[in-house]
Image 1 (cartoon, rainbow, N blue to C red):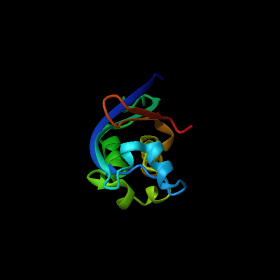
Image 2: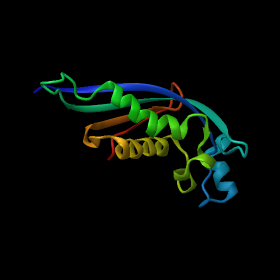
Image 3: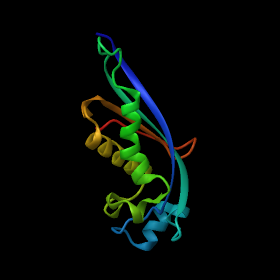
Image 4: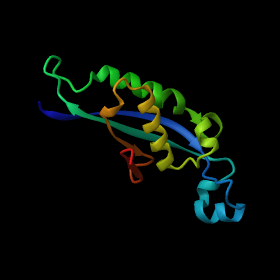
Length: 138
């Protein structure tokens, strides 16, 4: 059976502040610069979620795209869209809300809601057009 990837793209807006409680205020400013602003800042993120698997002979699909859309809605849109990551998402009480950690959060959340989580192949998160993180669960 042939193998294929399916990618679904969604956009969401969130705000956050890059700040580690394990560092002094001076260290936070030195490391995170303007992103450590006490009032935070926001992004219009774009996420690409890719699943990979064998194309089913009966359905002709790796996964129904409608199901992938539902998984992304539950794992990404509901917890992250129009939220303050640091205040509204419990995961970021213990993790700095970097793009890397947001990608990991999305990966873990998708794994938790997907009917067949082994199909999840890649999360590609665009913080900006120039700042992109790819996470494959490794």
